[in-house]
Length: 342
Image (cartoon, rainbow, N blue to C red; front, side, top):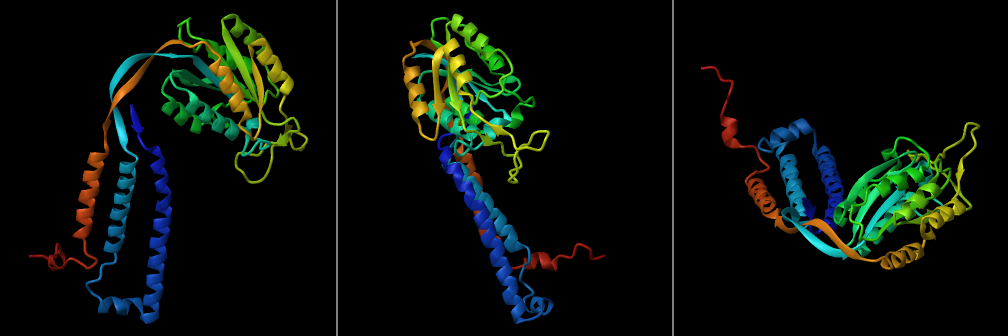
C-alpha cells in the first residue's frame, strides 16, 4: 500500500503557479527593458553569447527540484509488511446520498460537501473499528468495501460527486440492502448502517429495508441533511443557473424529515438533522460509542518503507546539472559544424 506520512505538505504545490507567474512576469519585464534600449536584432548582435533558451531550461529544472522536494517532505511510503490483527471494535457502513439535490446550498457550503466534511471528522474518531462506504442516488454502489484503512476511506470520500451514479433518484432502500450484504460474516460484532440523505423523492421501500436490517441485528441511523425550507439546485457547471422543471420553474428541494424519522424508527436507530454546527456529529458519535465492541479482525500494514531517499538523489542530481548550465551559449558547440561537407 502506498501512502504519504505527511500529506498536509502536498498543499505546497499551490506555490507552483505563483512561481510560474513570477517567472513569466520577469521575462515580460526583461523584454520591455530590452525594447527600450533598441531593436532586438541589433541587441542580439551586441550579445552574441547570450542564450535564448537556457534560462527557460534552468527554470524548468528548478521547478522539477521544487516538485521533488515537496514530495520528499510529504514522505511517500510503501507498505512493507501486511499483518492480520485483532482489535475490539464495531462495523459501520455509511450510505451517502449523491443525488443532484445534495448540491443544494441550504447547508454551507452544500449538502454534499457538508456531509463529506462530517464524515471525515467521524472517521477521525474511529480507532479499532471497520468502516465501508456506499454511494447512492437512483441506484446504489459500493465505493469502499468494509475496511480498517481510514486513510483510504478519506481518499475515496474526497472524490465523491453526483456524477458517480448515472441514474438519478433517491433509492434509500437499495442502499440499505447493499449495506446489509456488505458486512463481514462475523456475528459477534455490533453492526450499524449510517444513511446520510435529504430523503426527498425516495423511490423504493426504505422502511421495509430498514426493518429487514434490524431483524438481522443491524441498526439503521439516519442523518437528515438540508433544511425544510428548501433551496434551488445549482447546475454542475456553476454558471449561476439552477435546475428547472419541464415548465421552466426553478426546482426547490426540501429535506423530508418525516421520511428520515420513519426509516430510523423502522431500523431501531437514531435520526438527527445536520445543520451548520457539529451537533449531528456529536449525537452520532454518542450512539456509536454505545454499540457493543467485539473482536474485529483486520489486515493492516504494520511497517512502511520510506521512499524519499531516491527522490533526494534525483533532486541533488538536477541541482548539480543546473549549476553547470550557464546562461551563455556553449563555445565548444559553436565550433562544431555538423553540416560542414568534407
